[in-house]
Image 1 (tube, rainbow, N blue to C red):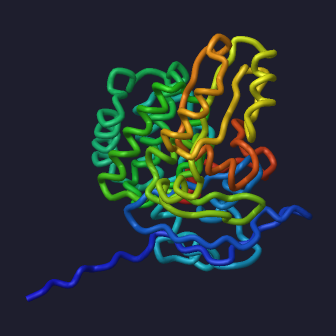
Image 2: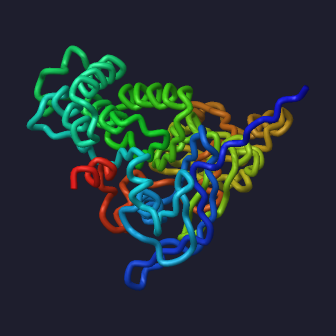
Length: 335
């Protein structure tokens, strides 16, 4: 006797989604599908429309055309059902700094109509899970950036949503705090939570995402697993660091296709990944003028550059309209 495998409906389905602000066409027909229990990372340069996509999917604004369903509900016709089932952590913390960490969590429990005892138990559970017990009864204004971000994510989880939107969640965090946040996200993934992630850190998408979409000029220009996207970029580069700018300029003139960065004194040379090509290049270098050499295989940064024509920027999506409002589910319940 064979048992049929039940196929889960996609957590998010978007078809032909469009949005304009005045004369600015931010989204020009986006199509994407996010399987339940997976992580989808949306990448793109500043102003590409990443935050706008999140704001539409979380029902904070409406699209101008196309369709979008979240957890089986249409964002246009049934937004309340969506708000009750999702969590949102935006670019900026929603923590109330007048309250302690515990009080912030208990407030979220009250706004989500959890019974008092259950709400307190849930707050305690999340404080333990996010390593905030020692600071639980301290004013959250005294928290570090990493602690505040952990508390912010814990507040999102009070109502146990099965779909979480993380819009630039590690913006402003130091490397250690960022990696702690990644570990928390991995635990959520293991629990079967679906995550829609926008990020300016390509390493973040490479570490966490099952599927990556690259948004540019209001269009989805590429989509696939991190490995599939990196496979679209042939070879890699050899980064040669020189001791002085004159030697760098001479090398750039001798080696075809090389790009010289005078600020970092680095020469980037296209490389097909073969040992023979590397040996040939090394044979042409002036050993006395070379301070270092590194072979780089393609990463998502190279994919981004190949698809959009420039490196990702480090600022927030300032060309779009206002940033994502925090915790829309709670705000809707509070009304």
